[in-house]
Length: 516
Ligand code: ZN
Image (cartoon, rainbow, N blue to C red; front, side, top):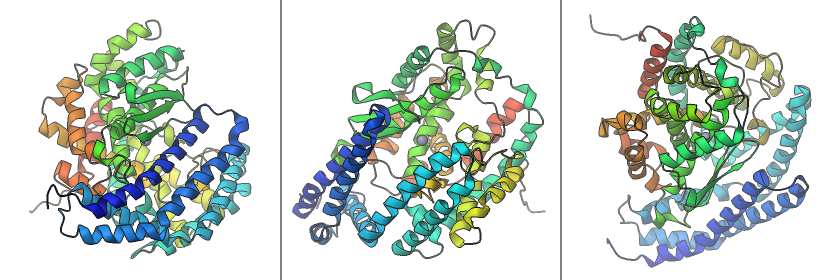
């Protein structure tokens, strides 16, 4: 009944809270490791992290959790499925079943092998030595297959792995979505390729002082609504966001003095992740519902602020004059329109993390196809460079001169994270779908952005996405917010409109099968 306290649920929450605390404490240690820890601290820190993770895992998989969970399930069977209580039990059940399906010995063995594999990758990449790395990669594929077998799946082992990062998404859905994206993006990339000279971005590589870059980007994300009294910005080798509670969600970045967009857009991106965390409902704190619905939804938030807002024309019409006050010499001969076009330059490139909006997803689709082939056993790890380079040629028309800039560029596979990559593209697709829905609800949204006002957008996201934390599965959340499940249409519309206009490319000709 509404308003009634369910004692069994309260007992489960009391049991789970310290487990959530331990997990958050581990995240603080990792954050410190990547931002402030001296190099000498690495060995002890690895032990400390392992201890915290082991403690929280043991507490969570203990029989006591099952007893409390079963009691709560019995107590709340007739509860509104949309209530916090019902969602809490649903998600805790899901986490519990998954955590107890993997034997502790297997997890320990896998963790050790992953640590070695990452270590070897760190040496192999700069040495461009794929032969050194591929036996470890082969091992990681083996662990991924066994993980899928333990977790179980209906269709394809990939489903079990994908579900770890993108709850309830199937490989069949991803394959269909990616086929459509690929089919309708490659022609745009080709058309742009013939008109590359229309965008000049050379001035972005002048010298831009770090402190000034930081001050500018901080002021922008503060206007977005990132609350620095519950957050912070530090430097790290790779930009990331991490949260320990809704009232402490931090971001990091790195700076490149010779390429202005690098840090500026990384800060927009990470602030998007962080605002998601800051917007989660206080009632979900210290429960397994704190956090995000999945990696795809998380990435939709970062990509929205980075690209749909931060790389939009209205945004730079407002902010370019301010940026030029900060860098008067570097931007002396540049106007807002030129700047807008420069930060949206499309250029097929070798490295995923440097890719523009149009080509980015092709990097992901390539990885996804290779992951599936590795899992199926139709591709051996040792043959990866050849398969990689062939697809780079086919998708993007560029071939990496070395494996370091090809198959070995990302850390994910070395750490055994197979099934993770699709969430980047899912996030891009979701970002456009959500943004379209926000604009439908608030037709003057782009005008507000053109005045440097972001409260309406953030308010809509808070209400539709952030406040729910991890309560709903990603597709259910999308459906509630946008009226439909995941669809590539808004994203493809966005890409063709924006980039067609910038590059003077004729509108997309889709194969519409009309009636004669
Ligand atoms: Zn991200």
